[in-house]
Amino acid sequence: MPNASDLPRHDDPTGHPRQPPRNAPERQERQEQQARQEPQEAQDAALSATGRAAAPLAVGGRPLTPGVAMLATAVGVVSVLVGGLLAAVALTGHVFGAWRSPESLTPGLIGAAMLGTAPGLFAVSRARGWHEARALVHPLAVVLVGLFTVSLLNAGHLYIARGGSVVPVLFSLGWLFTLGVLCVCALIALAWQYLTPAQPLGPRGAPLPGWSKPALAVLGSAWLGIGTGLLARPGFWADFVPWSVNRPDAQALGVWALALGVGVLGALAEDDLGRTGPALIALPGTAVTVTVVLACRAPAVNWSSGPALCLVSMVAGLLLAGASGRLLLAKSLAQRPRN
Image (tube, rainbow, N blue to C red; front, side, top):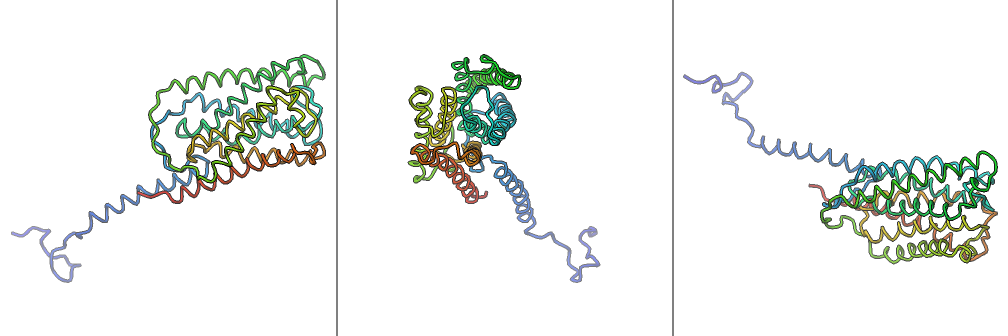
């Protein structure tokens, strides 16, 4: 007796038994592959929008420890608050800081640098490994340790030692205490990070183009050289600053110049745009905020001097390096092959 499935259906005009389509498994496989590809495309778009490296991820390396992520976030919050305060007061022409400065431009530039690097610091916690964050975390450690050391070496210039009105004295005390705490936390976080077991890194996903390497080497060496000179011999190198500075001003500016040089040369050593995502955010941000302060306090700068021309070139180099790096990284993502 025939089965019910073998009988002709009323909606089948031919009267033949209904057979499943032969390409059903292939169609189902294509649908599953498309379903897997769409979340990957959405993830790549999200990574590109948030500043994380969107180039092919290099396997291996050290995982990013929670200590480094928390340190970067904490310093980012402090940078927004303190840096924004210093920059805003400097734009009004008033002098405000942990020590007495002859010009409002120096504390304004320090605040601008803090404010400009904050977005990159917030992006560190979204990095997928230590190799993507170290190009910015190493300069961060240089800034924290350097500014704390400069503050201790010039303790006699601080408002907490010389006295003054209540607000500068309290700010000076908070400046010293916060730098000390963050400096200790940075050393502990870096020690913890480097004690974490590591695996060999895979091939670079987005190498730097050859034409950019000489320019990055010159730019990084220039910032590193002027920063080292201002730190080691501030009495001599302070004459190369195109506005009036005292000893703590010169050394604090030297710390930031040294950190910028370490960051640029560190990105050059990485030789992979995918490993410099947070740094690519911090470089143009710092250049923009510094440019705003310099433009608003332009009368305090001796623009006819050679150091002023060099400063403009070096700040423009930071902006070009960061912007071109972001464009090349986006181009690398667009050319990334799809599985």
